[in-house]
Length: 434
Image (cartoon, rainbow, N blue to C red; front, top):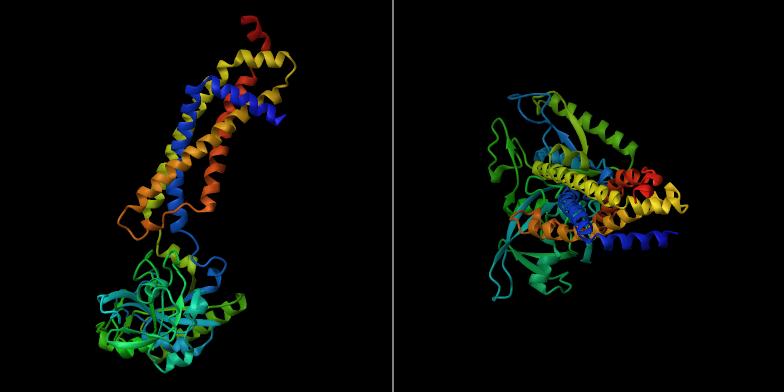
């Protein structure tokens, strides 16, 4: 029976080609505009650690001075060197990583390649296991090498391709900032979106290409990038960052279950009270554990104009659907005589209604293909924008399926009223007028 409905729908669409094209075009434009903005929002607001973000937390303290104290203000998303090292060495979490961003000059061995800068991450050994970074060659360094301030590095796939043509470079050296560093690991292409573990350097930029032990970076005085907040006598002088009254490091911990979260929160609150009692903290003891997704919401990582564009595109889609309803109503009502004949020959109102909705569904599928083309064009235009987030705008399988599903459902919804109106016409009146 469904095949028969499809055949009738095709015949009807061919008979009224102008109306058919207008309906498909209206749906395609609405779907294309909506899916362009929804895809951008989907990419930018995604979970950077699918399935694991709920077990990764940022410990937060408030070591700042009393000036400007306000309980309603969020705690800093960074820690001081003293607090970071104290919490790191306490080892109260399954994994913990203390880090900051930077940039290092690379001096290639090949004289044909000019020296260049790459972004760097100065961190501790657990970074790679905690964030599940994929290795192509080698492995991460150990906690012992952290303590020894070893001149070692993990490099990214892009840098490995540039310096070593993609070969296994483990055991070889790179010259960074005038010092040789032995490569212990090479990552596969890796780019978490957003760049959640350090929102002070970038929200959507690419992952770093050189990873160095944090202690080594301080011993070598490697260039640091990122935000810093100082108070009191803190100056933010790079030579004295370990003792300065400044927050400038990101600390993350991995806690496997609710019991571990509760235990670490108790430990963190106790630590804050100890610092107040010792006189290091001037403000009342405050401590929080913030997971990845809550931090992204708090920091409003997704640009506000992206959400506004989504609402505007959905409004445009609604206008397109209203126009589609009008076009379908005109088309179905013009077929009142045909519908009446079918009813008089024994077709039930339900079967006629189903056949008309089948026709609307075919319009929706065709509109989905048109909308896909419009969305791909829109995303190509978005990627041309000079913004690190723009290059991420690609249609994945989820959004591809959503394009056709939304188009089909929207067309069916638009066809409900016209189909119902067409089925409500008394057959006798139409046959008499004929």
